[in-house]
Length: 337
Ligand code: NAD
Image 1 (cartoon, rainbow, N blue to C red):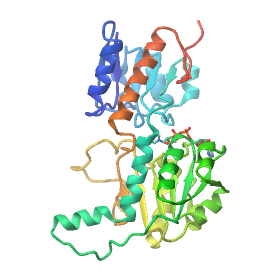
Image 2: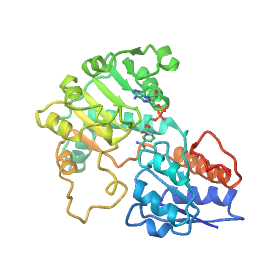
Image 3: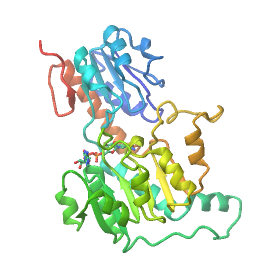
Image 4: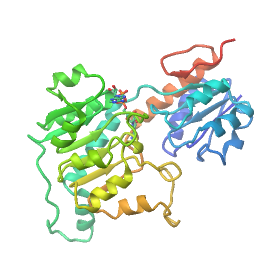
């Protein structure tokens, strides 16, 4: 049968294709599409029992119903997060869903640090200047990290990897999570209420999943608690930060730097070339105007190591489904019988 993959990026395709050929090519074909799966594109999935999705595909109730009506029975998400898939509706429709529950947390943790260091030391502004042969240092002053406080919001796999790097810089570690991580405690992390973390941290990095309880975790109140010269990094999910409240905070001249790899309204924008179009998202356009804000396009996971692991696990999830096995990556099992 032909299996169809949506939103496949140019650098991802050879890794996904190679893994597919290694495991499944003698029985099945893989069709990689660059388009994202959504209400407009879902007719292209008709007749495909297995669909591979990713973070910026929209698998809401309408899309899932169209998939089920077109004969889809299994969705393999090429990511850890699955907030773009309505699992309740998938279950009702008898659509099996699997995801990649583990891949290199270092890919994301190292990238969160890349953003933190770049905004702290004004690297983008510095690089623009030196390209113009402007070698002045005005406005480029950063701060030492040693002895300052890192607030890690969510101390799971990625948060713990981030905390280990912070420990290497000699930072004091504060953590907030529903569960304490022994690896973080061993680094000397102190778990505190989130209000205390926001108030005391010089650097706040977000690593909790997006859930109803964590939606707009960084709202006006939380941002108001933060030190006016703190750095905020979000490499988890855009919905954790209330963009309007962040814009107000930045307009007021608060926060010394913000690094965002994710954005509330990134679906339909991130991963795409929008350079020849009028930018109609006013909030994204406004964010871009702040020289202390650095935005990247959901690329934290994008290392050879992580993308290779995602390809291997996705193909293994498909192979499991085809042979009736279920593993830890199954979010919705196929209907019994
Ligand atoms: P994880 O499951 O190992 O860690 C998540 C942590 O959040 C856990 O310690 C958990 O206890 C905590 N948590 C869950 N619900 C909570 C709540 N309501 N309040 C407080 N803490 C809560 O996950 P991970 O692998 O570390 O990934 C973290 C997040 O990073 C993912 O959910 C995803 O959104 C994001 N992510 C982003 C990228 C990217 O490319 N930017 C890539 C992968 C993952």
